Image (spheres, rainbow, N blue to C red):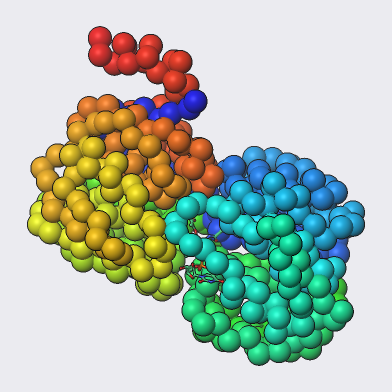
Length: 430
Ligand code: EPU
């Protein structure tokens, strides 16, 4: 069993470089199935979700090679069957992107209902709605979604809500459908634009990604490409909050400041200084942290994927804060862990009510999901004493070299196997 062990209370200082965006990369790796030639992806994050997507492609017969740390070669031409092995699909949310890409290529797809972080109920009705408009029938047998289409035909897709996954899946299937598709009420996250740019760089004809309406002219063929994935908005935001939380001074490189605007605005409200440059930002905290109220919203609002990190920061702010997250029904499980560390916070329905305290203290906690796990690292960095975080496999799904990156900023954090931990504990206590 692996754990992170953190000795808190050290201000972060220095520079950190942000990796490629997880939520763009998982969709782009699945989208390579649509390409009629090999593809090279650069700035692809080395995280377990991507390793897993690569495994899925290999298990289906694709050739996948790691050319260097963040560069991968993918040739999906040898995939013959439109099926993702059941046990592989069911453990991650992003496996749903294989539905859109397999349907686009084979006019057929068989993929288990996706799993992923337990953030509450995560239905795929909007994905299925899009596939139905394009002419696919869907069926559910033994926990697997089966899609069949004699022909994919463009049409008007109107989403009932902003869904990142459904918007991307609709683009994936529509880009190889016959004719013209209009997708209304789309999600607008930066990774949606990146997936559209990737598809367009292979010869797709997609306009309007990043707005409410996306228009797709179907094409017959997509050619090979070498494509660099955008920097990860949420990884950058996580380091912004960690820098603010420890009252450090950190330069965050390889970012797109525009993607960070909602996070920057909230941090400024809390009393944090953020300076923006072309592809980097600087963060420091000149005085005390101030309480505030935050509502998560689809992009360009404040991201739900930053909710646990910002709430953690607010546990040390002066005054009372309320953070509301209506996007997922079960994204506050980390609050009970923060209470073990001395936070004064309670969850009521879709909001956490936080009364700032003077100090957090280290404790043994468990990461309930990916972003909550990152928030607990931040809590550990803020706290006095030793924090031990278990279930770190969640964190490893989405953060590349997180220990090395925090250590590069001066943090005292290490990855230990529980058998080693007791030795470390003895050293720490000595
Ligand atoms: N929803 C439906 N029906 C659908 C699709 C979504 O009711 O068919 C609901 C969801 O239950 C949720 C809301 O719509 O209440 C938004 O869900 P969305 O589809 O946008 O989320 P997702 O595609 O499942 C992606 C990211 C999440 C991120 C959300 C919101 C990936 C692989 N996952 O999930 O990322 O929280 O968008 O921005 O892109 C993370 O990175 O930690 C993470 C959980």
